[in-house]
Length: 309
Image (tube, rainbow, N blue to C red; front, side, top):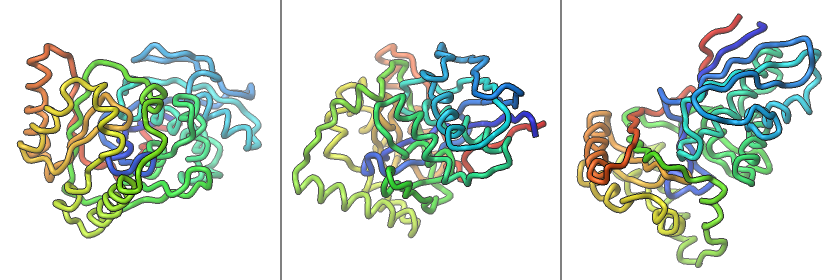
């Protein structure tokens, strides 16, 4: 294999109750990345479409993660990377994670898969660090492992896949504004009360329980965040109204997707998810604010190989 083209999907991190701990992989929306072997060693980004991003491998997250992989791996070739962005940076649905995870996944395939997808997470996290200023695995673990994922400890590479109830469907509304992850992380408070910690711990425990027992109502009750959401929500136009209308129209729960500005709602079934999307869209229509809406089931596979030569 000398060339590979992959689809690296979008993802949602945190899911309200699991800051830097929970992630889920989405379907349909994502980046396409093409990687080919070259005789000259090293990594070069030759083409980027969809967004205006740097081709400098020290600044582009795909280059940063690929370089981290090659720094630990003996290879006798180099790699050219083409990135076709389907996820807007600063959207809150894992734009940097898709590129970071996608480049290391593709290179790993081309060199004979010396690493498992789980082992690739530590390299992909280097791209996330370049984007946000901190190592966190919630998005990249979801993209590489697929489905719902749990990060027990990023620095110790301790993350694993959870059960994904088949009827869960997501509605994601993305207002066409950008919130940089680094800026959004900066407003998160560093200290929380014992009561807040207890409530958040209870919610994440019940959320995971809900996934395994496929108790949809319990999943919905667990999507609650009294620590970070009150601070980040002020950056998102009409957040409280979006949340209110999604719940009124049948969503199990609603919250901020990653660091925002996208907002997600979880529903039981795609028909409800679509109804929720229509109700959310009406709010931004009244504001005359441009937006995208995505309806997605859980992508239990993660990155997909589209073509190889």
